[in-house]
Length: 439
Image (cartoon, rainbow, N blue to C red; front, side, top):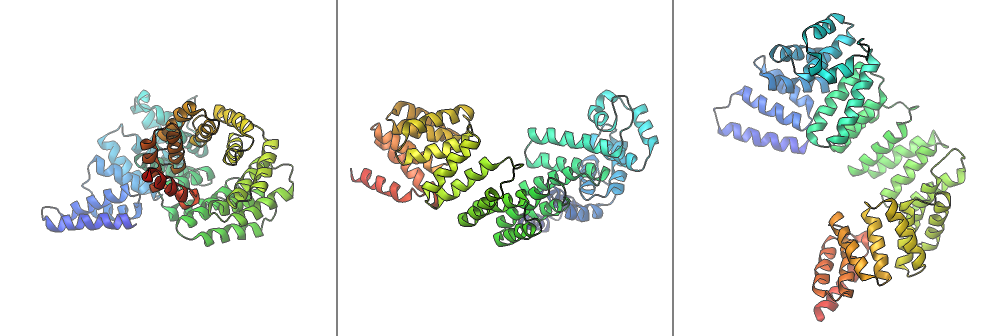
């Protein structure tokens, strides 16, 4: 909302300084800004002031606005205007045909099939017609739209595509108001857009008995913490747990929430509760031990952390995350180096794209004094994650051991600039730079 207000202020300043703009021009500009900021309520207000003299582009934006506000009747009126101008406008036809399904209007489909070149409307045919050419019912058409959204979102993950994804999801939800997955997907998009209130609105539409309910409540809690309300998020999950004391999903959500908030003692309490329930149907115990181990490690209780990591690997021996975390812990303590290297090579083979694992393996080569292998791999890590302070520190150490001291100091300085308190490397970096500068 702050960005929206700032943009509106800029527009109003421009308009007040330039009298060639009419009030309609002002509404047009504000409406388009509002759409790009996903403020559809504001866009509707401005479009209502524009009246009837809209071109195809304006009508298309108005169509997106009405659909995202679930105003299907108004959207259908706009769709018909667009089709009169351009009968190949895909979004207009989707609205028009969706309205026809809901109104049980077969005549509109007869007109579409009779007058259109069906090869030019493959998407519409997929959404609204079965392979035999029959019109799909509401639920099937909604499901087809959702499949299109899923495929499109994986290919186009940006603000422009989100505008159209929300359009299609809104159509799906109007066709099938009980379509829970569409509500959840809409919430996720708004969450990515950092519109947390809108995300919460859609998450709260997920019914309690649905498999996505716990994830929805967990996301609401996480979003509250992003808004600076972590206590509200924790209370939400605690209240949920009070009514469902044996629900593993809710306990996991609360444990994960506290871990992300770095409240490790509380996280350990809930991870331990999960373990003590000993539910044979729960399949993620390896992960529970792994996350509890991380919490112990962050609290500098390595003996307890090590036991959890080893037990996690006993349950699932090939987990690259656990192999990496345990092996790196051994490297830092200069123990079990050969075993650590074997584990890291296995983890790297499974997941070579993880810069965390690549960093650990490169650090292992350094510990084994295989400096050429260490530097080659660590330089790749820096390309993968150029802002990772610990990796920059590691590369500096490797360069220093290779007598490339100037390069070492450069990367130590970069690491010092980027280091976070939880990295716990700043003091050591300062000492290394002081030694280098003294030399």
